[in-house]
Structure formats: C-alpha cells, structure tokens
Image (tube, rainbow, N blue to C red; front, side, top):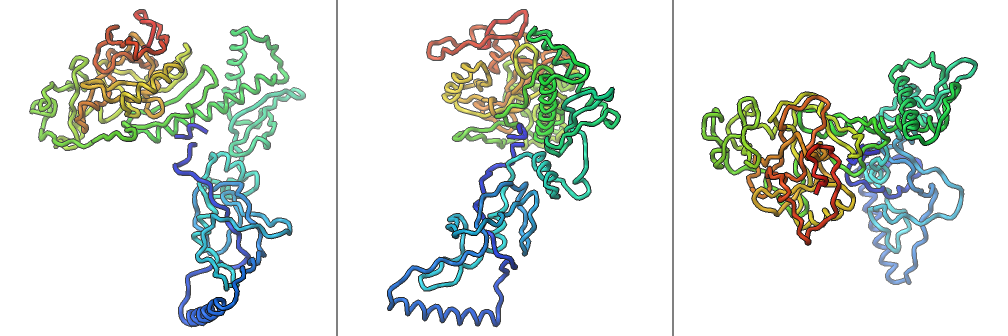
Length: 539
C-alpha cells in the first residue's frame, strides 16, 4: 500500500533494527543494589587492580574468546507494529516480535558490532561483558512496522498468534468475515463462490455455497464487475468470450479480483485523505473506468510547504479591532482595497483584485464575514477517474452557488528557477502542476505535483467553472499570496470542477499571456477539455 500511505506509508524515519544478541535463560539485569553487593564489588575492584599491576610486568596476551553458550543471532523476519516495552523476563514470541531460533551446534560467530555494550573488558579481565539492560535490549529487538496492518493480521492468524496492537485477540482470532468474492462455479446444480476472508491469507480461501453467504452488496459488486469486463471486451472487439454458466474463465476471475483489491485500496486512500484534511467538506474517491489505484507519490497537505531555503512568515504584524467588519475600517481598507465578500459570503470584486481577510491578530471572532478562505472547503467533493483520458478529476457532490469559495490551491513553494527546471520534466510527461505566484513579482511558484490537496486533481478547461483569486491572511508578503478558487456560476451536483491553467492568478486568459520566447520554449501539451472555445493546448 498507497496511499496508505505515503501518505499504509507508515511513519517517518523507519530503519532496520540492529541484530539483537539473545540472552541465556534467566532474569534480566535489574538496578544495581547497595550494601553487601557494593562491598563485594569493591573487593572485585581491588582484585582487578592487582591483576592489572601484574599484567604490566608480564607480557600481555590476548584474552580468550568468551564462551558462547546461547544461540547465535540472525536477522529478524517480522517487524513490529510499534516499539513495545520489554518486561523483566524474556517474552514469548508473538506476531509483533520474533526471537531467533536455536541453530545447530557449530563454532561461535563473531559478535554484531552494532550492539552497544557498557564496558569493553581489559587485557586481564576474563569475565564476560555485562549484559545489556532490558530497555536497551527492547530498543534493539523492536522496530517500526514496514508492512500493512492487513498483512500483519494475516500472518498472526496463520500462526495462531494474538496481538492486541494489531487487533488480534483470542476472541476474534478465529473470526471469519467475507472481504470479497474471487470466483464462481456450479457443481451438481449448486452455486459456489470462492471467498477471500478478511484478515486471512489467500491460502485460506474456500469455496462456499451461495446459501451460506450473507453479503448481498459483495454479491452485487461481483456481478457488476463481471458485467463491466464483458462489456469492455465486446466494446473493444478484442477477444470474443463465450459465457460459461458453470464456471468463470480465468481472465474474468482475475479482473474481478483486481477490481476488488483496487476498491479496497481506494477506500483506504479515502480514509487517509479524510484523516489528514482540516476542513469541513468530506473527500470521496471512486474509479469506475479502469484499474488505476491511488497515486503512489502524492502526499496530502493543507497549506503551503516551503522548499529548503524558503521561509514563510505566517504571522500577521497587525490586525483590525472591528466589532462589525462590514461597516468599519477593516483589513481590506487598511490595504487600500474593498471588502471582497457580501453578506451571503459571495465574492463581489472582479478577478485580479486581491482579497485581504481578517487574520489571527484581528479582534473579530471566527464568525466574522471576512473569514472565508481560511475556513477551508465547505463542500463534499469526489476525486474520480475521468473517461476522456484526463486521468483523475474532481466533481462536486452538492450544489455550489455562484461566486462562492470552493477550494484553495496548495503545494510546495519553490523558486522560479527550480520551477523552470521541473517544468521541462513535467511537460515531457504531459502533466501540469506549476502555478506561478506572479501577483506582484515572479520569484516563487507553487508545485502541487507531489504535495497538495484536492486541487491537485482539478483538471484544466478553456471554459472553466472556477476562477482564481490572490488571498492574503496571515502572510502579507505580496510575493507569496494564497491561491483561492471561486465558482463563476452555479455548479450542480455531479459536475466536474475545472479552472483555466493559464489564468496565473491575474484573470488574463488571452493568448498574449502565454510566453513563447525561445528561452522558455517547451513541449506543447494537448488540451482535452472538449469546450467549444478550446484553445487546443494547455501551455
């Protein structure tokens, strides 16, 4: 997994744990005691001092290799879901922790250099090194997990092991729940389905009679996927498949399994997006066109991510003290512009005019009518796979009124020089994610190729239903405006959201705004918007 990112992507800073040295049976060393043991230690110290004095007179010899009665170490084969606290006695192996097995007798191997020790024995010392404390041993044995939760659950159930950290307990260890259906056959006039059990490996899939299955939704998805595959084959006129009522052909069964796995992956990605977002509107994901899964190299963010060397000062230096920002001298008036919104939270200024909203230093509350963009998307949107070859797109699931805020365009803030270098690569791939912040100067660019939000998936159109505006809230640097997308007309539920990639935040969409100079000549990207006024190219 993807998304799952990344973003099933686990956490940050994963690394392989060093090989742990197993200990002989017995208790782990505890805190150092006082009293009689301390006196014994002092006696041992005096004996060591006398031994070292004798060694200075006699020729030095290499100390013999310490005995190695316990098993030799070997690499871990299963990684833990999270670092666990190590008890005072060696725990029994479980699904989140694997202990090395006792190998066959043989010569003792060399000790791993990565294991920290408290003290290296001197030339005259014949005692073994002091064993590691339990806490250090735990850190050496337990590492963060690099596999998905489902894989860990499958391994746990396969080995009949329980682990509360991954949700496998004695109560649900032997639970069976249908995850999806893989195949179909008829034997002696009885229908059977090959069932993939949730949390169990594929080796445990079983054929179950229809009367034992209480999953009407999964059965409906099974037949829908079968019908879609047959429709695609007949439409493409590739190979004529004769439908067999007693069993499915391998190609159909393979497609149904891939579609089921894709559906699960998209659901996980949808859950991940909704966990990361900080706005009210929900995000949905669907793909009824092909077998494309979540993007592998995309990370959801809610605000600008500055590239190394770029500093974003997101703290305003002053704010208003209005009690009613509609009738008093508010932040827009201080900046020399008009208030951007009316009482219905609709934008009333023409494109190209900046928006100055109230910031964190203003004394007005969160219900201030001049706080619109900073509240984030209020509409539920859906990332869907388009059928016209444009890849992913975004559509609204509810009606959007005209001249209202829809979403913000965020990404990685880079310099114009870096944007020129990346632009050459993106044009060769036929993708466009660069947005120039050229409200006052042309120093910075927003790159939403790898880091972004829902706007990353909004497609271009020469007849768009979204308009670009420059917004200033906490960061008043005119070189770094925030990019907000407002609706230009009423957008009905199910309609795709689009904006003109050539607006560049200024509202100028004429052909004169495109740079055709030889120094910046790039590969032309063909436009597929299908609008009557289509210009033919995106750049």
